[in-house]
Image (cartoon, rainbow, N blue to C red; front, side, top):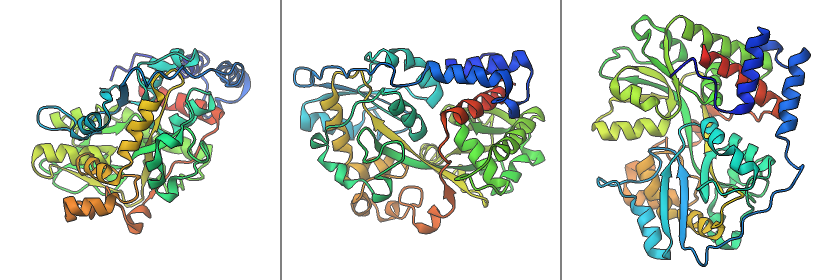
Length: 401
């Protein structure tokens, strides 16, 4: 990563610039004059001043749909085709274009925020981002409410995900896949297993560790390793963990802090261990033909998250997007996707369909976790607008060096 570049998110960019100019403590970001800068930033992006109007739906006359998502996140054959998406087009007549546009929540947000704020089409009719970012879009009025008549399969959503605090009743969002953040190590080149965060700081791994630019996952894993309950942590507990990350960057243990492109560091063997996402490691192992990288939920606990469908305010093909979402909430289709991406499916009935595909697949705890596995992970608590700006600015300050 280029440590000289400022972050793309303009709010975070301004906060980091102010912090640098004032040379103030990260722990005082909300105090004094800088608190006013944050307040101004929040006010500038506050929703509700002028309600946006959803784009006119032209789905009947335009049978296409554009879907923006993360890499390695949809079934793919050797020719680069997506079998379940091709089957959707064959079944509905809607030509679907899959866009691998998301590497990191913040960087994607930076690319589309200006268009969203104006209610314009961003070139995607549905986008899958992590729930905390989905919450930001919903707060700002940048999503369209679903017509659930077009998504009858929404009834298959697992009960535990029905009523998130940011979207009660799932009026504007439906989960795509979930997963864990935990540890990984190269089984060929790392002789002693990595089972705890402390193991990342062994001498044999110095300069060969990569961690996620997704603040909630890296800091969630770090805080858990310090005995913190990430469902109800304090600011001081957050900064204690951030101090540890900064120290490990400074002393040369952490080589890179990256989004989805961290997998390139693993494949090149520039990195031998790190804090990573579960499903990516399974896919990399499938490509390697054996368990070259071992994914581990650390003894202190990992994080659990969901990436989530939403329809941007400017999409003119909402009905087509809803039909796409409905397709992927069919248990048989959900099981096919799960068999390839190896993330946690939110669809009831997919487990039974997975048994038909491969009984061993259905017992994979990274796809169909049981109560014991779920007891080892926690969801990073929701942040207020002020906390999100403060914590993200502090984290970006460490990324920038």
